[in-house]
Length: 320
Image 1 (cartoon, rainbow, N blue to C red):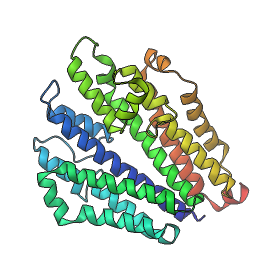
Image 2: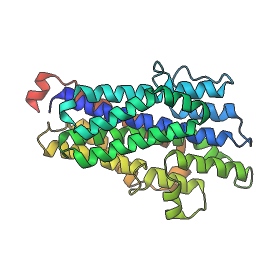
Image 3: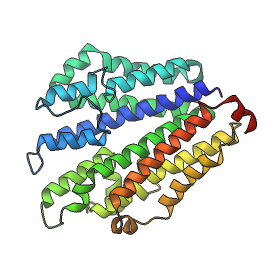
Image 4: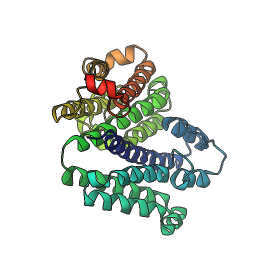
């Protein structure tokens, strides 16, 4: 597979995952703001922006409606939903021959949906419905991708982009929520703490899945265990890293260039860390540092993937 094709499929997937993450977190944050409890709207907005990586141009100014609309429809804001959808569509356009007609049609529908004047008018009355439409469009695209695209190298690069983006986003979200999860005593602010923890689970579409495993007994340690170490839930970090490792192995088996030892070691190290760490070890140590380490390792894996499969030299291609 040409490096430019792998690059476009990889980033198409990452941008769509990023758009989904932004839309879902924004919807959850707006719902939390309806409760005038312990945290102010400004506090919750700042935490939300931090969970997106603190992009510029999203500072709190008191005008919640303008800020939320900008985060959805501002094409100049690199964190906005519409910017991510635009970038995903452009990457898909560059490799139109590598994806199915159904994928292209579904992505085009999502693109025209977020650009429609009717959608922007609807957002003034009910932004949650607009965000739900965006999430539905992204979910439909993922379903169409899995059912209409050949499960070869291209599909594996799509999986790779999706899982790395998701693992990084989940680790960032947990790191930002860490003070609310672990620093408040259980006997204080119980109502506020419960609301925030449910919001955290909903940011990862994890509330129902969590309840199936642990019942509705919301507990900080269990949330960390579920979102970091669970191997069966698609938004858990361990699941995402296992998926990334499987994608790399499949790319190699299907005729791709053999990954260098540095890349194999980076993914294997993170995979082993998540596979052989218990939640008690995370809690008894520095949980924030542990989550930050996951983010750093995800970035290192991305850079090595990019350097090996996209921006590699002719000499390295001939020697591998």
